[in-house]
Length: 285
Image 1 (spheres, helix red, strand yellow):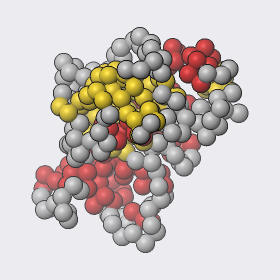
Image 2 (cartoon, helix red, strand yellow):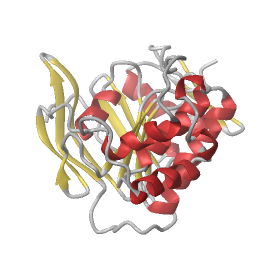
Image 3 (cartoon, one colour):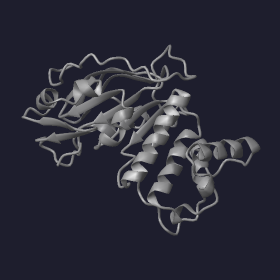
């Protein structure tokens, strides 16, 4: 553990509405975690427990290691040091305990894959080809479609759907396997405000109903601010963990960025002024 990071703040434990998941073990646990590429350290000495049903927003400028953290949890990138567990087991590629919602990217207009087929990949996409049809599989896919209000897209070619409709299906795909942990990598990117709200509310409803822990990487906290229990803020190897009111302050962000940063609350929105990386959008004017 080097001296580059900021000592984590003692964030209050989240107490979201109860759920069926066991609260005996953390849904996500990192201990003295370090991730480095060559001589560049993204973060070091990271200790983090995410409880079942907790909503953790992961913030920071481009290149700070937000997506890399998700890759570690997905079992795609090994830690340089420390350990990581999901639902009490080491992170591994293809774990059924993890659902993943990627950034919104428009699918090819000519893609004829149906909505139900895209969602079904969340059950058996790790296998060669499609899984065998069965009443149980069909029912789980339809339930996932219903959970995100997308039953009407079940037989539609996904390439013909709007970006917001496609993102609904990606959320359903991530949830169809009934994961303990839902990893969201900029899921609101390129969506209009209405679809941002819809996707955010779908994810929030899931974690409240089923006790699914959510790690939500985003450049824009305002659409999910009312839902967030805690924030993990990463900047140049430094980090801070705590409730939004503890982390999203002028003093804390100035310390993280090593320059003067102002955080201004306007009604229910946060404006961050003076952060060096203006690709990092937290409602900057």
